[in-house]
Image 1 (cartoon, protein in one colour):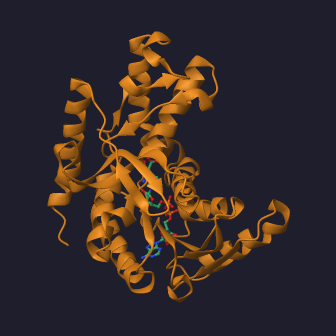
Image 2 (cartoon, rainbow, N blue to C red):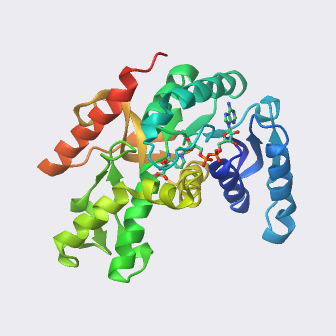
Length: 309
Ligand SMILES: NC(=O)c1ccc[n+]([C@@H]2O[C@H](COP(=O)([O-])OP(=O)(O)OC[C@H]3O[C@@H](n4cnc5c(N)ncnc54)[C@H](O)[C@@H]3O)[C@@H](O)[C@H]2O)c1
Ligand SMILES: O=C(O)C[C@H](O)C(=O)O
């Protein structure tokens, strides 16, 4: 375990992330920070009181400031507003850019060596804000979206084939939006190409459902967006870093020439270990997947271009 993990934002994603981190004993202390007075303190205390039953010793505390977060090893940023039905993630751009900017300034000042995992939307652009404001190297600013998008895709395939989710290997790349790129050519069931087990039409419908996965939950919840699967995604990344697992996970990473692109965050296969982003894997893509990735990058660049940092 590491010494201290901070989760900024004690809302749905943040609080669930903190609880999962504690239950997995990934840090000695978890600090939840939120601007709303009493909420991080109350949720932190409530989670700590579950420790004797759940059997973890991780101290969970809440705060409205950053003093308690000083020297964090990992910071997960979930602060920001969530979308409502009819909105796109890009509609959150201006509000959340302001929030992530102020959070990133505090992290830079109090935890200059932290590895930052960004969750706030629109994800790829918020990663850019966090990296720009902290000035941290790309190894230490990584976005969570691909793990979630891939989990949705895998869960739908497992359901359709009536097999264990554990046997579905897959990867969803690209930006965290309507243009995300589920890689059919790398989707296997215990090594068996998915195309041998499922008709193409059914697979295409699953790909589309995965692309719309966030909106599907928003439509049900009406007042907010998903948080159980998103927090699982964030914690899988924290776990990979804390345990130096060298996991290969789809994460938003700052590209410096990989896939022929530079100067943006985009979902690509990443190796995560104790140093954060340890490597970006450049894999072969079919012509269709390559075109889809380029289109997705363009969809990320558009909101980036209207952002003043
Ligand atoms: N990347 C992904 O895959 C993914 C998945 C789910 C949610 N999200 C995004 O995560 C964000 C949070 O979602 P949620 O469901 O937890 O929302 P939420 O409204 O439940 O919680 C957000 C919290 O952020 C807090 N906050 C606002 N400004 C803050 C600041 N300056 N400092 C600290 N805290 C601040 C709010 O008080 C609130 O408690 C949203 O932007 C959402 O779109 C991303
Ligand atoms: O859809 C959203 O707005 C939240 C999140 O990005 C998700 O995919 O669940």
